[in-house]
Amino acid sequence: MVLPLLFAPVRMDPERFHSAYRTALIVVLIYLLWMIAPHAVRYTSLVTGGARGSQKTEVSPGQKLSATDLAVKLRAANRLGEDTQLRCEPATRDWDYICSYIPTALQTNTRLHFGVNVDATRWTNVSSVVPVGTAIAPPH
Image (tube, rainbow, N blue to C red):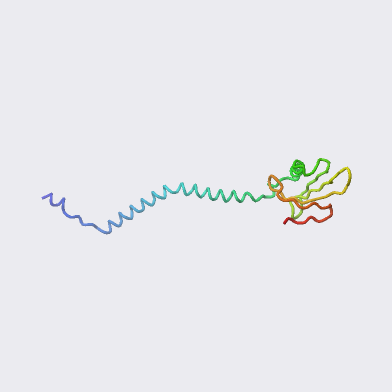
């Protein structure tokens, strides 16, 4: 008599089935999030790090090449000799620095000047050379 009870058809309760189904789905979703989360965090830091890196190409005023370093670099590039009395000073507008020099210190006292834009390590734009007292054209 016990045997017929063991093999009796089991009646399925739809509400219990849906509850178990929802529980299994929640467990699978939590597992997937747990597996994906480290990769998502790494990807996010990679993307935001790249965005920060591209913003660093903008030079803030504190990161510009100094006037003294600019003069040293201009001389080192053989743009101007030692006897030219080269001086670079911060500009008030358009250019980062205005540099002036005497082309041939032994032959003339006429000073020339030009504008220079710089980044953290080098000059990026140089104006045409004009006599001191003449306006320097803005960068183009």
